[in-house]
Image (cartoon, rainbow, N blue to C red; front, side):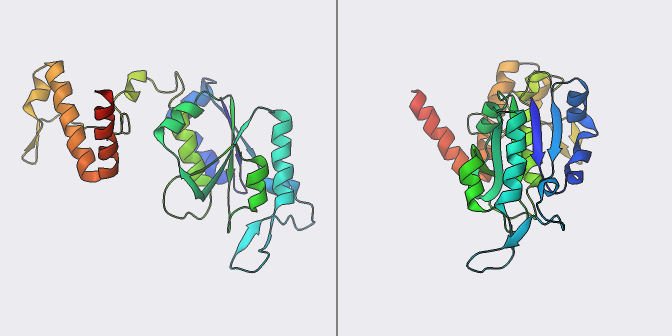
Length: 234
């Protein structure tokens, strides 16, 4: 799996891959990462990549010619690349998207800046458009890293133990059940005693109930989808 980041600030992203799980995945050649800077394709001597909005409005917008040249260069090298634009004007990225995209060979993540993209770029080049939440970031680099991290951990071998993927939050529309480690008593708070008795069926049932309660409290929207799923299974 290869990720190409289209960004004006590759240095904001590079450091994330210098340690931990994704660094080991790069060393094991399970992943590869490269960067394309639209400024390298600028057609003017000042390397300008943005312009004022037609019709007025605050802020500058990434102009289409430079970014289209950058994207064309990627498509020439990787004709099957899956191009994703990161923008708050899009559907929210979900766990199922991470699973699906982990089957891709090459993903291009296009990071916005300023007031975003000329809309024609999205219409011409985007295979998908994602947001990471109902909030605004200074640029798309953090959002692109979120997607890359989430997709990468679904790739076989990236996590040391693939069982780590089981029972995670958002599986079956549930948040993950609370986790505990020793000591059994910490500041007068104790681990549920059933966790220590070795009856895995009872532990699984207890974790399910805890996950249901946690989801109902924190994410009622997910909980309602979970309950609907149970009805549909009957």
